[in-house]
Image (cartoon, rainbow over all chains, first blue to last red; front, side, top):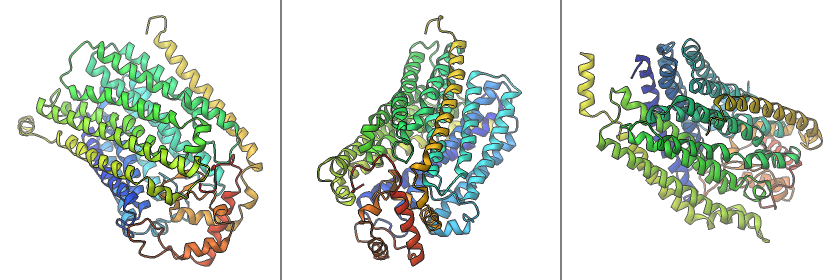
Length: 463
Length: 144
């Protein structure tokens, strides 16, 4: 590690992985509720377990992005972090706010939580992914501002590289677009129109800038390639992301009450959204094939390549499957959507955070890479999680095909709940894959536990 | 990539492309807003329907159901439930009141929320309003 303040990233990475495991546990609960409908009812109803599952995902990915920034920005800027204290403080604020919110979800009925937290004053709750009480949302804004200030000051007073500027642009967009979470009109069409400015423009817009910047950083470090080359690729990827992704928002506007022309804009532009992901795959493999050094952290390189491949498959290919309006007419809001959501989030964002953790944590401990044994364990976790996520996606796709046909496409459409029963086998197989995924995630965490050599090193450095 | 295509060209495409498509998106947004009064059924957005939307959010209905296809996929689509229930307020209220408090063994069941009659009216008005939005004839059939 070059700069002492990079160490703040460690807290964020530990927090992220702990919440990741929690997210998977709640995923298993809702997966089981799909087949055993009264599981944990009425103590933990489906909607509550689901909001814990999705909100933990959002929070731990944000923690991962923040950790990544605190690690890579000092190195890129060539100076210590502007304020390591603020970074540490904000971690605890974020963690405690997140924990209190989850405790709130689980301990009182959601409607009571809305009352306690004064949702009536500025109603923002009860919308998908934005279920957090308004005060939590305000907390998120404060944490984001403090974070941006800290990272921004570090970048602006230090060396400005393309990687850090792209990362900063992505983070700034993330914070600004979140402000639409506070806009909640009664007009449902307006509500939905701008809700997507948070959701779509995050995951199919500015988050991709963050993803590309982190991936570029890890590839520069592990391949020893010339920055100029990597930066050119980075510009091409993010250019294509925004050129396709901004108007691509239209693929969410097919059936929410806006004019029909959005079917054309949305279909054409979102059909091109796989392009930046494809370029990212070419970029990652090209960089590794032309590498100028052999980095001892083989696991990190595996994660980087895996991110590129599964982001392309999950976000690109599976997104394309249901993005054309005539197809989406039948697949919208079915398990097909869920299948795409799972592999896209895993491939793009989960994996890039696991990549930077894989790369950075050994260095924060004063080694270039973990021992071979621990790397083998980590690679096992890579394959267990990635293969089981591919299966989760395939099983949900199978479920979705049955659903689309029986409920939407056939001449004699059947009611929702009747069709759900006919999809049970796929839900069971999905749940089984989920258990394997959990094992993979636990192995990942275990592969980073400090070994006795670390403890020795730590005691010698402190002495 | 060859040297003909330089880093500064890539950067210019990024800046120029992003700026152009942000402006195009804002223009389309402006046009959409102008078209909405004829499509979004705003005349049905009464104070009762607004109260219904507040309840819809307060009870996190979207955490199990979809509305115009968005939400969770655990329970039926409600954007057209007004039509599915034969446009009948009695049927809707009867269904809501009949949800068992402790659920149904082994099966999914909506919780009993103990809504007042006034609240049930509001929810009904909200769902009726949502059903009247011109959304290009989605879903394909009454099953949602």
